[in-house]
Image (cartoon, rainbow over all chains, first blue to last red; front, side):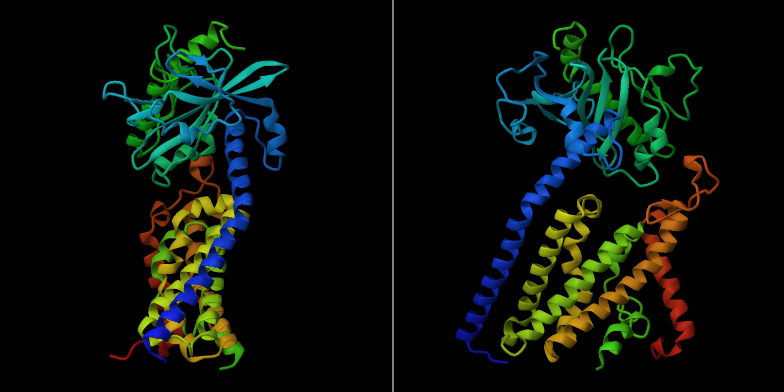
Length: 256
Length: 205
């Protein structure tokens, strides 16, 4: 073992140099593939909500049916002069002119701030809008639960819904990933007849014969707080402070 | 030591988790699914093997005052490269495993082999020793993983073997097995089993 100060410094410097080159090299070389994977994963989740995803499909090819648009939540209008392809949602969330701070009464989902610009995915069929896929998220028990909600063109009926990211307890709140729970969503309605946010996660299983069954969602055994999180998320995003204005616009035929 | 001994002794005779009692923490986190066990095992085997080999290559030039930090730097670089490769080639699983691949650097097995073997042995022997200890770690993780995934969620490698009641089947899953502490209980049972057949592993009073 050699111990002179000079030798120590040299060894340390050379080691750091070599390791840095190797690590930086690996990161740079692998980055394109990683970004491609993240992009495909994102598109897959949008398609999943719209019921268009099957394992093994060419995600990019199927995604050509989807037209992204950037929506201003405050006006409910599509922002024409922003290119949706280059619009970066994560970046927009940080720009001060986009950030709306919610006060406690409005903030049902516990997310504190939102960006007034949101990317919405319109699924086209034969040239017209068939489904509207919205990004929704809200506080669960342990984590922020993020998902995609697909609404029919009537902007009331659910075509599909699932969470693509959450950190809830496996086996309890984590049952939001259970295919049976996910399968009950198509056909439910997010708004009542008088256009109030309607989704209600009940205790126990929904009996299709129940009154107002179309607004009710099966409860999650042992996961009351996660279930509340689900309900609150819908409460917020379907309201005027969320996608409410935009969806009203869609219904009036304001956007094609 | 012969290659065969270096490679296979750590599986039962000198298991890093079972006898040396190292690397337990990650055993709790990733053993709920066999797919994660497989990926974690390969990652640990390669990181331990390659780091040990690198350290053995430069063992005579490392000043003893910075010995530990040099080992950490080598291991950390290997872990980062492994993590990046996973994100590039096994994206879905790497998302599920989130921080645990990065935490391989905290796994005592990696540091333990570098300090305990690579500093005094040749590069190739160190590589095989690292691989062998990784293999021992993998064996223990697979044992725990099989119990946890099969009886906790009725599946093996994600394929349903016993249909769950929550999916319309007959098997009432054992919820405890889905939670991390169950891994501790299972490891305890495995150690008990090994020492019943290999009493020489029991520590003398």
